[in-house]
Length: 84
Image (cartoon, rainbow, N blue to C red; front, top):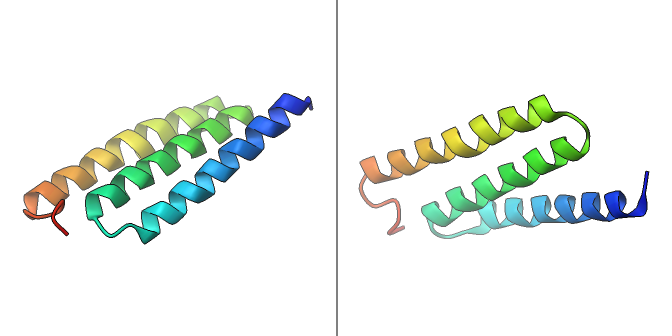
């Protein structure tokens, strides 16, 4: 494995951990949902680096796009998701 792949893998894992901590520690619900979607993007990138493109596409489609849209629609339906 070449050096640049190891460095890229470490950066993606660092981004994954930081965005997951931000998702948990955020005060606002909308900020937490956005941080959670960024965590999914980092997870999809990691799956791509691990040579699992089918899992990466599934994570990007379901874990990032669909789940984020569902959370945002739910927050808007309960009126006040961005205010808390």
